[in-house]
Length: 194
Image (cartoon, rainbow, N blue to C red; front, side, top):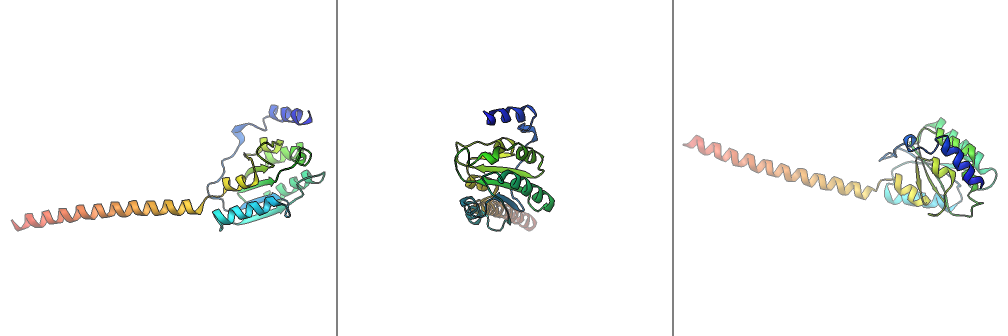
């Protein structure tokens, strides 16, 4: 009941409005990760970045992700990330757990801080069926930490394939243009001989 009451209150204030949600950058300059430094979520996130685009810097803001101290610690991490202004996207992630384990992500002060945070914030809390108030306020909610990271990290293999395709098209167009120029030159030389 507390969850639904808080959700209704914040929705009425406009904290969930799509108009306020920011676009996620296609190629982040730095990804900030707010999570526990000992949980599985940080290992998942780092392995996805290593696989998809290893040159993107990652900054960890280590916080507890359950219990009484978690929500205030996450709020402090948001403040610190804003002060440092190094990350253009933040991931707020945690693996699965019970409703009680995830309750810190349903804290009103945290929801307000997320709504006020200027860079883009993506949540990946729990599993696909888990929803928290933080998910509704974030710029983007993803079902798991790994999906959160895949969403903000471009795939370098796809980028390289796209570059290869463009180079091949340019070379094809250049070859066609050269062939047309060669034919035109032959025509002009033949006209001069007559």
